[in-house]
Length: 582
Image (tube, rainbow, N blue to C red; front, side, top):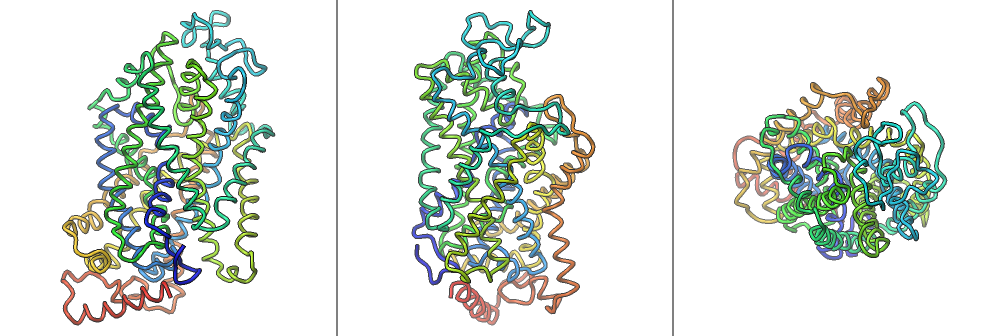
């Protein structure tokens, strides 16, 4: 790892950055969230708003963060302090969002580990009803007559459930009747959680130098396994019926603005725009790296991965429906359940099912683990940026703090392993990072740079890094007008047309609904809060707080730089860059 000092180092090679970014942005959401949304909101028609927001929402936000990180080459907090001080609250909002992601996202990894361990059983537990957790509704997946599986159970007149459904609900989740019924913790899930946090610590305690090497494995292996799963799925009986359900376009769905909202949230969530992580990762790049090209590749590869993953998921769903003599519409599940039900059932019917199931959950683990430890390392770095006195005071200060922080977060994350944990997980999954606050935070980033710091002069500084670009006017238009307008519209729609949160047929009580919105507010509140605090207490002038006190981030005046401006900006910006790496 090269660098001028220990504070702000550079990636050893550009591939380190690309693998770290790919591993962080391509995660479980590409596998289990996108295919279901695509199926539920118009099939192939959903690709229209998904691709649209990929290029008019996710890409502009990603480019903005990348340019800021590479231009200033400081940590997240100091970047906003030096660029537009009044918007320093964006850094704290990013920090809160990452904290909320870290404490609940790890639950997916815990469930995956449990399935991975169970994959080595002589008889896979999700194909048989001869287990202690099964009840009279269970239909053995190994029997020949499965027509009653999604119909009426002849014993009690209720809907039958597959062995995979019961393994998921009654053994993995052990879900209670509601969020008010907390229940007990599961010892095996607690042990798996401790193991995952230990791996997170081992992957991050040496900093980005070691983390980049980990990404070479965690980003590459899942990509290979996804391709294998797609090829395998396409060879199964009934797979074409599943793919037809996946891609069948329902153009009428595009008239529903909620479809566009879901597409935007999935795009931003999947690519990682608005989290500040791209800014932090890019701050370790060389000053003249072509971030335009890298951001374009990241967005396109991310969308392609989501699209291809849909073939893997729904070819398997078609196969299961074919074997069960039922329709894909009978699978009334979403989110994590889509993967934890469809894949295990289909793979259990293949030769060497243990091997295929183990490979599947190994792939899912790597996909989620990369996202988890990048968010975690980002969070740890922000803590040290907030308390710089911790750095260097003790020889192993970061290693010790890292270990203690992992233990604390591990204990907090156990709340999702209770019997009411799945209900709580769904709240965090829906409101911690993809709710209305997410769009407002993204909009604030764009407004801060494009309107306060100045979009034109920001692009002039970009020219110093990577040279002139043909799309400067287009980018300015998106940064200043088009993308912020969409952020406002999406946030407004999320608030005005909010629907009560449900988990299947369960409707959350009012206090849980209020808690969900509090989660969203907990990240956004830092932006106006810090702005008001600085305006009331800072000794800087109002112009300086608004990002107009430095020619490096002067406000747009509608003109190009004159020669005097160019000379002064060249001097000031050179000092800025030198100070950031000195």
